[in-house]
Amino acid sequence: MPAASTAAPAQPASASTRGHAAPACETAAWDSRDRSVMSVRTRTEADLNACVQLAVVVHRVDGYPPYLPGDLRSFVASPGVIEAWVAERNGEIVGHVALHGRSSDAVMALAAGVTGRPPDRIGVVARLFVAPAAREDGVGGLLLGTAASAAVELGLWPILDVAAQFDAAISLYEKCGWRCAGRVTVHFGDATSLDEVVYVAPDPGPEG
Ligand SMILES: CC(C)(COP(=O)(O)OP(=O)(O)OC[C@H]1O[C@@H](n2cnc3c(N)ncnc32)[C@H](O)[C@@H]1OP(=O)(O)O)[C@@H](O)C(=O)NCCC(=O)NCCS
Image (cartoon, rainbow, N blue to C red; front, side, top):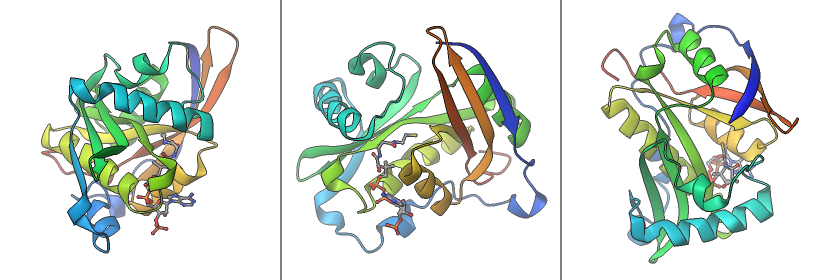
């Protein structure tokens, strides 16, 4: 858990960016893909080992997650999860995403300020990762859209925080219409710190 954090908000949401119900770009990212061999479904207990194995590969290749106080199993099976999903291609799990109830205090405070929502009406998209061999084929966009749509259905405004060095993820979020809310520096008890960028999904409207 972070010991302390600092936040630098971006500009508040402008009126012109409000009123868009679509939380992400799963349809646009997927229209040209072969749907017959790919599916996204709710993660079950039986999927956990495969998800952890995938996380091991992603951690080695990408350095994600950049801060790992415990092990990868605890990271994937976070107690803060509302729901999690896996992407399967030909029966193999190639991607993962989760919806959490909250992130660090600094992230939640920044998101609350930008969205105008109390933290309990915000949902945090987290634990998004795709197998290196399955990337740049729309899987990440599909998973992002799945978690964001689920958040909206629960009456939550989707947000997320991403380490500032993860350029591919940041490109994905911006392509999907998410807006940068600002930056947060999270300081951990072991004297390390992490620079993060906070993104908010397009305004889901009063019901979302
Ligand atoms: C970020 C990640 C999930 C993206 O998954 P993906 O399946 O490759 O994403 P998609 O194929 O849906 O990409 C959609 C868009 O994202 C952007 N994008 C994805 N990978 C990119 C890259 N390597 N460089 C630049 N832009 C990229 C592009 O805009 C892309 O659209 P395009 O294909 O029309 O150019 C994947 O790279 C990953 O697992 N990274 C390591 C873990 C990580 O950083 N997770 C985020 C934690 S917050």
